Each structure stands twice: as C-alpha cells, then as structure tokens.
Length: 194
Image 1 (cartoon, rainbow, N blue to C red):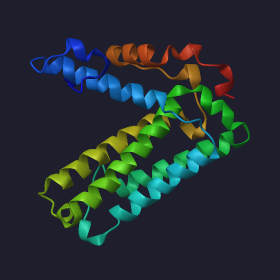
Image 2 (tube, helix red, strand yellow):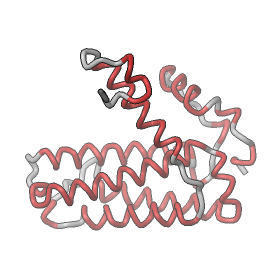
Image 3 (tube, one colour):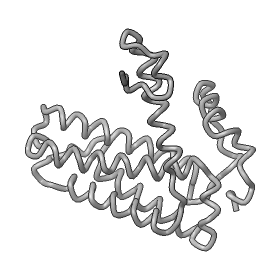
Image 4 (cartoon, rainbow, N blue to C red):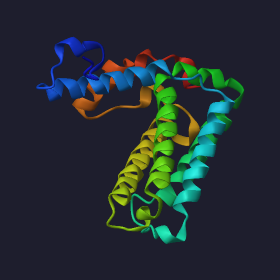
C-alpha cells in the first residue's frame, strides 16, 4: 500500500503525520534539486516571461489590490529589473552563475511561484476578485513570498553582483540551515564574485 511518504514509506504510518509531512517535504526538495536546469539566457527569458504574465493578471482593475506591502505590482517589476541587472552583469560569463546552487534554486522557485499564481487565477476565476475569498488570501500569501524572494535576491546580488563571502546570515538557525543546504559561503568559488 502506497502512503505517499516517499523513500521512507515503509517506516511511515498514517498515524505518524509529522514524519509523513517531513518525508513529503524531503521528496519535494529532492525533486527540485534534481530538476535544476542550468542558468543560461533562456532561463532568464523564461523568468521574465512568467513575471510579465503574473503582472498582467494582477493589473486587472477588478482585483483592486491595495497599495500596501506586500504589493505585487511593486514587487514584480523590482524582481524583473533586478534579474535584468544580474543578467547584464554576468551576460558574458553567465556560466559562472551555474556554480551558485542558490541562484539555480531561486530561478526554479520563481518559476514555480509564478505558475502557482497563474493557476490560482485560472482555477478561482471570478472568486479572486472577492477580497473575502480564500483564493484572495492565497494571492496575498504569494505576494509575501515574492517579497521575501526579492529581498533575498537583492541581499545576495546587490547591484546585480554576487557578494560572496561578504554575505552574513545573522540568525543562528538560518545560518545552520544554509550551511547544511548549500555549504559554507566561503566554499563558493571566488570567480562568482568577479
């Protein structure tokens, strides 16, 4: 009997929801890590296209988005422009970005979140225009996620340039997670900072 718990399913019973949840998260992360494409001009173009699609959906006047943080119509152009800045800085040496796992994961995650917004609009149809509807709350949550993703991108690539060893994670739990997931920042090749 399949439990949907991934590789450790034989040790996961329906009575152990926490283990089941962690295994599902592990499977999801494993799939994302395994499916990371190389960073190239096409990956930037795909990201820009997805951002434009989401932007057009959010510009619908019936949506009546409030201009308060997190405001999707501010976040999306900022993300678009910051990705442009990164692309222009690394245009001649774009292969260097492939050595930075975080950036590859960022692009995959951005694509995934854009597709979630597009699916949300498609599935909820006119319900999304009602501020009290669950789909609207989901859009607000995704706006917050986009906002945090932009802040992370700007922190790692101020002015479009990777800062390498100069980036410091101040919270102990976050630093521990980062080191386990991506290794220590000092281990990332120096040519990324060039």
